[in-house]
Amino acid sequence: LPGLGLQSGSVWGNRHQHTSTDAMKGNDDISLHVNISGLSVVTGRSRDVVLRDGDAILFSYAEPRMVARPGLVHHRIVRLPRSSLAPLTRNLDDALLQPIPRCTPALTLIANYVGALIDDPALERSDVQRIVADQLCELVALTVGATGDATAVNQERGVRAARLNAIKTDIEAHLGN
Image (cartoon, rainbow, N blue to C red; front, side, top):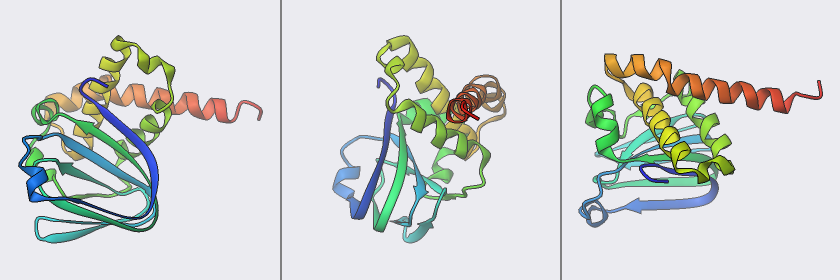
């Protein structure tokens, strides 16, 4: 989507290395990787970060890193331009390669929202794409430390939309009860 990349998938015994050469290609996009289930070990900035069920981490495509997934891992990824996310956060660079614990409230909303969006035919419409990109950008900012102004906007738009989606999904799943 314009200004937004979404991925939901599973990998087994995977090791992905984003090298210094890759990092020098001029792409400074940011991506939030949510470990839905399984174990991932992220190496970057001279340290290892272990992600377990529900944990997440923020990457910059302008930095080298390696992600090892020794077993089965289900994950969701939101990729955004740095220029969209940076103005909404206190200090984006400080949030990079820091573990985001599963108990972070907006993280669950993001994971569920991305899961619901993956096969949604409404995403074929450009006006819907722009709204979804803005909402996810705001939710990622809220997850990693939004500025005061951005937090207020997030509460009004991104969080409400994700919560409404979660409620609708729950209703559909339990309609027969």
